[in-house]
Image 1 (tube, rainbow, N blue to C red):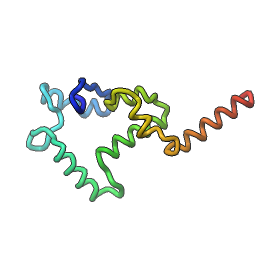
Image 2: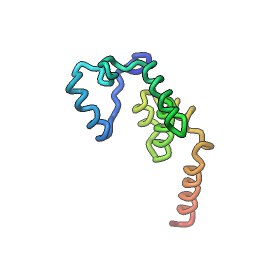
Image 3: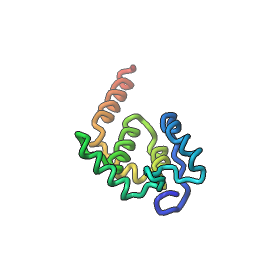
Length: 125
């Protein structure tokens, strides 16, 4: 269920993630799939603890929020529609994507691309 448990959330997975999860689906057909070494389902505290340990090993700060934020920003940069991104990350509509992630100042390279495309069209190219 989505945060707030309003509607069931379906998240599309790429082939790599599907391959990782397939054995877990067979092992835990009733879910939850993601579990610790003792077979207990992950909790938010366990996930936060893992990120704390990663922080010590990585040269940058890694958090679940940062990963989500990066996913959304990369999707925007790569031309995914705001509506589609909102659906994948579980928002009701694209409003939150536009409000939080859609700031043009965060995407100067995209703005330059828009200007180049406009100039090409104006020049007849």
